[in-house]
Image (cartoon, rainbow, N blue to C red; front, side, top):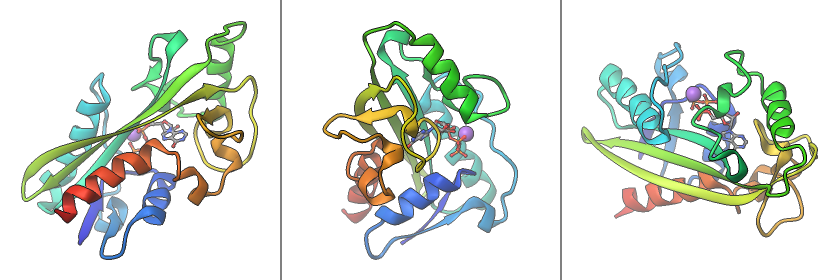
Length: 190
Ligand code: ITT
Ligand code: NA
């Protein structure tokens, strides 16, 4: 099956491609001719995820999906959450985002956090959503050089290495994205 992915984030596409079972292929929206950034005007992952998929479906009238991801930190009442990409400002500067997160958590003992991903699939014109969660803790400082976004400061439960110290295949054994993707794939295989 062929699905178009409403995302401009190549890291997401790479992780998803690495996890796809045989028989599935994704095309990123840029390769389907959609080059602009899709706005994310809403205040929940669910609504923004849906909006991205709707946007692409309106343009292409083909089966497609999107995902919206947020890092939800317990001591910060769920922040940065839906604002994860622009936590430190509109520049989408992930170094500045991590700096802001570590600053806000300075001296705070509760480092519990989770990544949450909401997939939105539009299939035959109908919307389906799937969630994936990865629980963990925020490290005191960056470790590792792999991955993207907040990976250098996220330690998933059950691992002694941050996401940035893992290969993509290792990250996929823990990740929010993989868990959500598995549910979407299972649905598509029914
Ligand atoms: P889209 O085009 O798919 O919207 P995006 O990068 O804007 O790509 P989001 O709107 O979902 O993605 O913003 C989530 C941000 O959270 C993203 O830019 C990263 O900085 C961060 N993030 C998402 N998934 C992550 C992961 O697996 N590990 C670390 N950081 C992640
Ligand atoms: Na986005």
